[in-house]
Length: 123
Image (cartoon, rainbow, N blue to C red; front, side, top):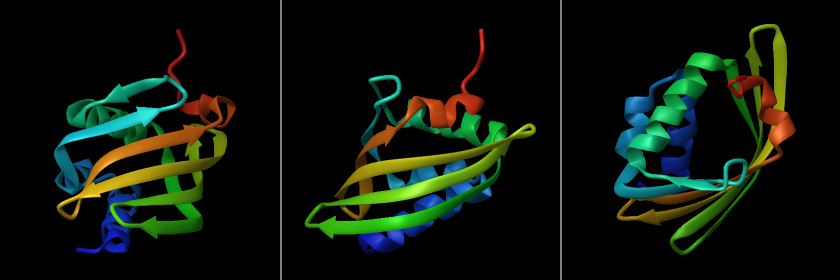
């Protein structure tokens, strides 16, 4: 499966709330870094965060702005649209991907914390 097909399937699975399918697109040793937390999550940590995301954010939709590929990697800019309760969320995001053996081996996510504040748990 080519990079575009993997990424299309990845975002379709998240949109549908099918996190088990996301897991099938990850390598076992995937590393997912988020600039908001400055932490890297392993496979299970990333899937747990995505499960929280799909439980919290309704009406998820990705508006792809740009996607560029190179040997073994890709970058995508998109706008994430969704709703958390009555709050409409619109978050410009940039992700870089590394691929190995047709699956995602690393992601680096860049997003402004304020754009995703509605989905962040409050103390």
